[in-house]
Length: 525
View (cartoon, helix red, strand yellow):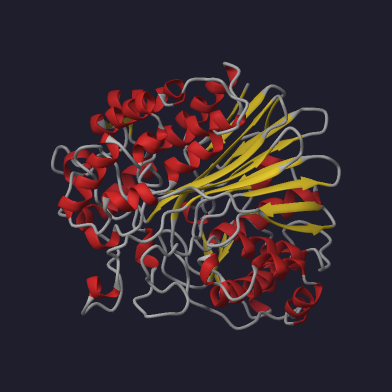
């Protein structure tokens, strides 16, 4: 794969059909925001194991005027999601009705992004490809088939339409077979006719609420009506490369920025050498320690994430805890999450970084019969405790691994980048950004080259330092000698996430790249 270059528009996502949906919007004069709405909807139809309109979403938008705004489509816990609902349980179930305990915020984020945007394409046009792929069907990819086969046992007997939609012949669909979702297609048609707010009020919302109640979820119509997307200030940190942005809590965006802020204070002479990897891995440990102590619903946090990023003493203290030659003890508890990152840039100078998810593969496993929506299980991450970090409370926002990244570099380039992968998201972001921005590695190569992962991520439970094959042989030995618990894995493993990136140059040239570990592409206009 090579870096794709154009000057009128660029769209990249982890599924090629979604990327092409974004490109077609750009080709019709649509904005990058409109292209991302089209990609987000299409991903719901063609990538339902990773994302959908029954989940949450986060946006960073760099405007042609240079402003950066943030949108959080993050749903809170249902009013009925109290500790008494889970009496006798040690934790919230990962699957099923009681896992579907938070409102889905993705559609509200689309609406907030489109409000005030310069785009003029009708909403029905933006949803056109999603309608077609859900109605007419899409060929199941190898990755999608593998996940469906692996998760079928725990999902097919849940209440709702999972078996009907995803196992129509009594077994998981295999690679190349056609997945059709007619109820979801009709839902997209209704959104196009009635408007995105119909997801939260009106007849569509009533159908959603009735299905959720019938299936045993605590989410009510009132919970849907009360939901609003929010527009918090994005987190930012200034480094020698420029100003880096990410999403504020309840996401782990602060951890992503802390890793890069700490690395900026280190010395590394070349990409993919010991100093590069060891430095980022040890910075990751410090960032995750802070994240796991402090990060969650901002209304419940005792420390302000932006204040931490702005405090040189705090950063210096974290840096002082890092040994440039030895690995600090690990592990800490990991975070899960399946996700889809996507981005777009248009000829006007708008650059968008988006990420959305239903948390686990197929979320809670509830597929709503009336609407075909796969509902998230993000609230399964809540702790069944009266107080403290991520404790379950009605209305509370759950901690999110989701975090879209964007950077305005000193030379005028604008870079949007991100990935799926739970704990791996900040680490893969750091690998891509440092390779490209610090060491001038070609954008596609920055994504395609071997990567690493400290701790647990999508599809894996071990907490070792997992490193793909393909690095210089001496690197593995040097990391082991430094005390890292190295586990070598096959190259281009899906465990490392499905990343993407695009760059807008000062002269208007656009570069795009997609991960060979995914089913995606960078589609240029």
